[in-house]
Image (tube, rainbow, N blue to C red):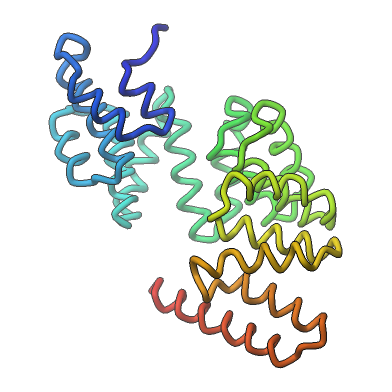
Length: 273
């Protein structure tokens, strides 16, 4: 197999804008019209330009890859019921799109609170995608939800052998260790993840929890305070700081933090309706 066209290589590396610029200079002889349209759609989707992605797909004809991209556009627009059958259709055809469709369906089921379905979708294909940065976190967190922490740690550790510096994998490993009551061990992977993703409130919250349980209140305070610079009502951060205040005997501050977390949770629930 040869190397994919330059724009696709850049896209896989996460450089959507560079891929878009190179695609604009791509001679027609490199790819046929349908292939160029598919690349255009992928680049536009990576840049969240959904209208352009949809327009490009109109010139791409029919096929499994086209179905997958159309499903992703529907999903990005919040039209889950329109996306689901296209993902299911893509899963029925052998090829690289099958794994991508399973991952997207698993993400939908994760958001819907159906971890059993996530496991059913991803467990059969995990051996062929040992270090997939989307599949492994989804599957590991589903295992945790089904009280299968040993399985969660198994798939994460296998992935980390290949990608030891991955923020996503280190974050999940920290979450797994926390779930297993090993807070001190969870600190190292969570620190690695936070260093790579300092703006990720969920990872910061897990680091705060691990530090608090391991007896490092100053580190816990710093980790729980960081997300508030982005979202002052972040529920997990507010509750964590409330726990610190309670442990220090500052009951008034603890109640203030609990109230702030409750307001933020209610606002999120209302906004999600």
